[in-house]
Length: 416
Image (cartoon, rainbow, N blue to C red):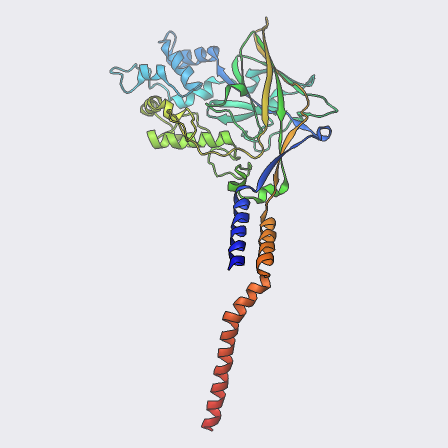
């Protein structure tokens, strides 16, 4: 009994370690052999007064009520609030302006936002020019249409990738962009997307007459091949292919947050805002829906931790297994005479460390551990358990059948 008790306790301990401590992280330092991938860069236009004025003059006439310029701006470059729209056309307005329903605001973005050639003026990687619009592909996000390079979340499922790789032969990489208008440049992983809640350290705001030079450091994450065989609950992360979201084709933490926010908007207001990517148009909010979203802004837009008491949205989203750690070393900002903005992003140094996720307790380890415990305390193997089944179940049944056949034959002989 003591042997059985000891073996059960140790087997339960091995099972607990398998469930909760199957993964470990190590730091690799063999940096001379690495190729370091540059972050995916997404450029999202944030304002364009010239195109807004052109659109409103064509739609509402010239002259018109110039509050509609602000309405178009806040709907095209939606940030979660619609102050001017509700003030002019909201459900609480007694007399709505005649132009409120002249055009469906869902259509505004397609006519106002700039094309790729209208945003990018020049693109350079390590002092070599390349075609911006060949590699910056359209990406649908909840902040509107953006253009991303080396991202797997673009409309084109197999976008051309520019070899933005840094190693001991190339040295630290540097990306130089000349951008027209007011925009935000997002520095993200290849699976991540710009969102309304992207942290500010991952964003570089850019506008005409401004040059920003950002230096960054990167620590990448590599996964042992066996990690994919471990359950999601054990490794506490998801690979991009383990996707059950309807928003994007690939899983990421940011994509999961967008999906979470979409479900929360549907639950609270019965509709979603018109910038939600890859959503059917019939789900988009009308003016009454925008009023609801505006009213519950803090509950729908602001993310919070499950243990936090402040107002916000709790999203149970796991990180991506391939996400990297990026640190902003320093930013230099200066004025320039040119009528466009310049952003330069430079890898401050080649990384000397990277993380690796390894499996320390796999399924085979659990089997070996369980077998060793039963052999040590019970002197048993898997054949021993088969023998138990045989002696207590199979053999008695077989003996009973043999006896039955013998009795049957003897009965037949006696009858003859």
